[in-house]
Every structure is written in structure tokens, then in C-alpha cells.
Image 1 (tube, helix red, strand yellow):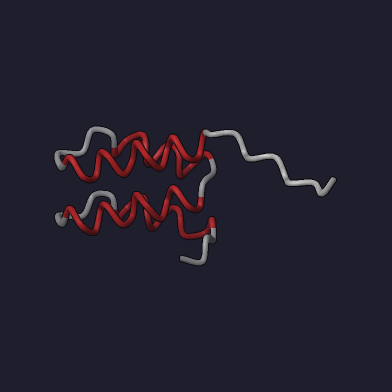
Image 2: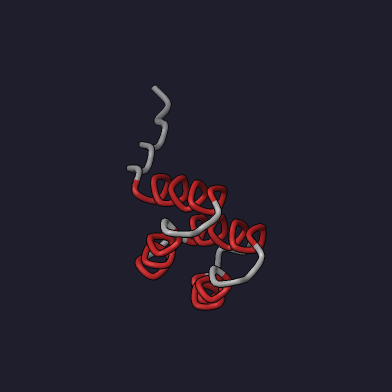
Length: 75
């Protein structure tokens, strides 16, 4: 939840957990941290046997790849 990129290697390892809910939460966290290594880990999760993990990986990747919104300027 802190968004520290130092957590990416540990989160990537958790994507191999035996428990689908644990993998799902790791995918969610990787999406929030972002970066190249998180993207690689999420891409590997697209082949997960659990549909909910695959879906979270897809959503996280699409959010990471989406352009950042433009800041609002007061007129």
C-alpha cells in the first residue's frame, strides 16, 4: 500500500503463490507501484490459471499504460 518500488521483487515472487487471492492482491499492488519490472511481472500473470488474477493483471496493466490525466488549470 505504500507504493514503494523496492517491493516489486517481493510482489513478483508472490505472483507464484499457491493461493489465488494472494496472487490477485499482488497483481493489484504491482499495478499501483508501476514501473518496468512491475509491468513485466503483471505480463507474466496474464497466463495465470485463475481468471480473477488474469483480470486484475489486465486491469492493472491497462491503468499503468493509460496516459496520465492533464492537471486541471483554473481559468
